[in-house]
Length: 260
Image (cartoon, rainbow, N blue to C red; front, side):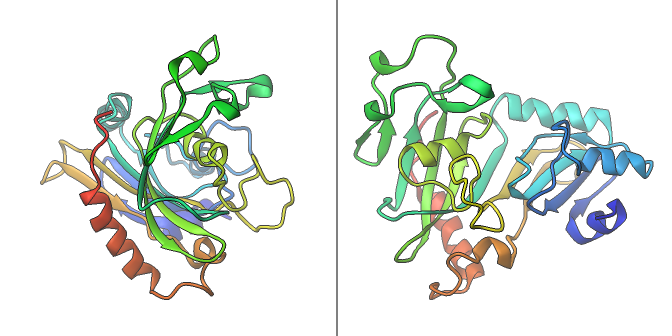
């Protein structure tokens, strides 16, 4: 896809400092040696963009890019300090998840640069609606505390739709957390090699950050998922997806903070 067409079709918000896009699945943001790269596509057309954050190539949805270095610095600091509010949507392969839950499992990087839980799979336990491992079970070496909160949006006989809030922002965090507790994301090539699905059903949904140059001092962004995201559950849903997401927003607001 040409940059000008992608830019026009994906645009959520643009001002003098930033560009927010609703990225299709299958396009990388930057620096992953893929053949389709937003930053390189823009540069080839004379536009310089600085990624504020990254989402995986297989993930669709909201991506924020800075057009100016001062804005880039202001926004990236909020991701570093974990003050940026993020929310994702996912369709999982299984059922049985609670209305709200917390996955508190450290991550590490193993062979071939693969992200994994930094503990034996059998040591993962569920305490109420929290998944965790005891400290003595964490493998020696470099590991990273990682926490994901989730709220159930919809259920079908075979799938669950979740709204997720990654408290930490580790690489592949949501994908690995869900897979290791037995609820992998539909079509995730990290865990499903069948190629049976057209895409990975993970979507970057919302971002909220402080933005000093904006009249209200805020950037509050939302990327609506397309019909392709809902495909595994569309035939079984009894409510309109927009109604489900409106309800999910209320449920997430009422969920008890973890304190992380």
